Image (cartoon, rainbow, N blue to C red; front, side, top):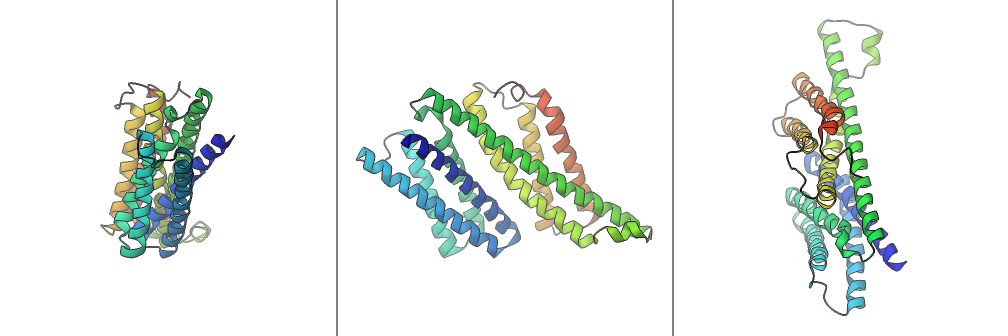
Length: 277
């Protein structure tokens, strides 16, 4: 019972860590100090939970937890979270904080969901299944964010066309202004990109555990990274190149085609997505 409770707390910690990373990403590209503060306090809570687990484990074993690969992974994740908090509090270097937490989240997820550390085969299989559930949920949520981003870009292009052709009327009035449509499209892309990145991290871990000898040229994997790249380019054009308007909306709508292809076509061409669970 106690081990099951600890496992659930570990999973809860991973979920909290994921939300912290998402908010750090939003602050990283949007300079939102409110998001940074919330992300920091979530990360601080993750650190408190990790420290409590570390202390309980040391009390139980009577030694410092670095003698096995699983103990070392947990201590490594704790070190990364600790350094992230220090960097965020003292240096405020957002670039370093965000990417340190991506690494920390990856290590924490590996430690939590690797089944070999569990003595019970039932518990190990259950953990792998829950890893898959979290991966699928996060991936679909990212697809939902990209879908809304696509809708706002499509409305932008429609509004732009109506204004260019001077088609004044009820249809034009019912659409939001171009600036608002552009901003909403951008915000949902900002939500979708880090969520898809975290989903890919968890998905690759699941595939490594569940599909020995998995082909890395699998169409679903290639399509997912292609999708992540397309929307990352969208954010790069918007943030670094200061590109706005029609060209960016066209890029966004074209990127959404990859969402559809990846979801409906590449899943059928995948060598393992249809049959493993």
